[in-house]
Amino acid sequence: MALASRKMRLVFQALAVIMAFSLVAACSSDSSDDANKPSSSTTAPAGGEIETDEPDEPGETPEYGGKVVVGLEAETNSYQPAWGTFGNSGMLVARSFFDPIAARGGDGEIYPFLAESIEPNDDLTEWTVTLRPNIKFHDGTPLDAETVKANFEEYLTADGARTIGTLTVVKELRVDDELSYTYVLENGNAAFPDLLTGVVGMPFSIEACRAAGEACGDQPVGTGPFIVDRWQRDNELVVKRNPDYWRTDDAGNQLPYLDEIVFRPIPDEDTRFQAVRSGDHQVGQTLRQTAVRMAQEAAERGEIQSFQALGNNGGSNIYNTGIPPTDDVRVRRAMAYALNQSALVAVLGGEGISPNQTQFFSPDSPWYSDKVAAAWPTNDPEKGRELLEEYVNDPDRSDGKAAGAPVTLELMCPPDPSAEALAQGYQSMWKEIGIDVTIATLEQAIIVTRVIGGPDTTPPFLGDFQTTCFRAGGESDPYTTLKSAFGNPASEPANVSNYWSEDLAEQLEILRSNTDFSTRYAAVEAIGMELAENVPFSWTGSTATSLFTTNDVRNLERWTIPGGIAGNGVIAAESFWTEVWLAK
Image (cartoon, rainbow, N blue to C red):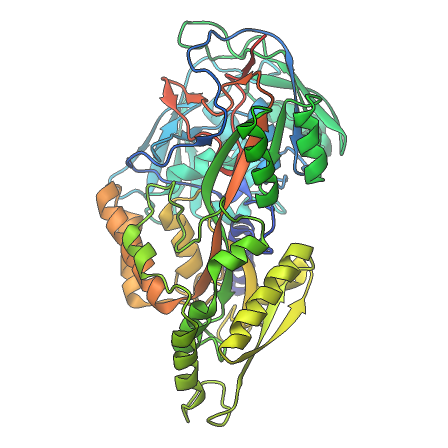
């Protein structure tokens, strides 16, 4: 591969992963791009249960008919999987008309959905997918291996596709027979099936897309339970029941139950909440902590239902370990000890909703570690001052200043009101231990550019920053998340903190090459302990989310995977619509 092509490929990889980690204000509601959000491919113990303030009744008999109107956080630019910016809102909509190849169960394991099976070879370099027979797209064309291959070659890996960075791990998609195909990978990867839960695993009619040309994303044609009827951008997208959908419920009844769903972007949180509270809309979505609280309190009064969850996404600051003074662990640990996480969470409106975060996985996750939580540096300004003074008085300190000179640094955050309040909180807490902090309020695009850096610096992708507001994590397999965040900076430009060690690399190799949960869990915990000691990130709180509904909505949080397997509920304010119904 030519050097220029290699550099551009690395840039694509970095951008893809940073979009997956949502490098925005730590209080932002922006979500991970599901084109890049794989998750665990191994059998795991049950994760945390979804919190429901006013749960629906599981023993009721589903009823057919009715329309549900959904208030979304944001509009989506396109529903072509290769082109679309699939945040939380986009995924919630897309799951009405697209089915995935695989889906994540409530136990953390990945299960076949459109696929009958997903099987690796011995060294995990090939993953063979066998599709279920007799499934058709909304236009009547069959779902088969050739269609998936055409999706892959003509769209998902085409120039300009947002999915290129995700799919650089795949050398080839090989058709084996009518319903079977194989992903041939650059290297063995135990986490690969998780990729198939996101947009790269959502097949679409190749005939319809070719015919529509650039309008393909305006009238998506999938295999899902609903068919797109019309889309008036920034107003509403309407889907109608697919009468030929391939799934049935446990009693053999044809799915889906609803006749129609109307999705409406309502950016204002209060307006969206009141639309559901008044009954004008039946479902609302939020990732804002203040709105989660409003929904929770209304549910406690019996006015609505609120289905809350903690995903693996959380607010944090990232420290550039390749640039002084944050290249010194004493400074980073001092900064971590200075932070009162509970106070910062309160600034974001998450008090009592968002627990203090200590690692990449929330208490709801099967990968969460109590040991790592106990090791995380908790608020202790005195310890912070002691560590900082040790650095300040070191004649060989990394910033080149004379012993005794104060530590100065710049904190970057976007121009969001709550982000600005959060930045001021950081500034005040760090000032208390003796750090002079300048706040740089910058647009997200500028922050992304400065954090990534470029391929031509020495070392490459060093980045031009010391610390920045950040949102990290997602519903990813630990290998995918941690390798991107902490792989060798020489070959992993998405490692924007530039933190790396041989011990960490050894644990990443265990994650890459093993499918046994207990073995992988031990590696995740070892990495978490190393990060707690070296602090390339400091955390605020986990992100609570909610899908809140009128009291007649059923099964929004109880969707299943074919075979009766329980799905993972409403993590990240996302769900499936196949089994939702309205109680009359």
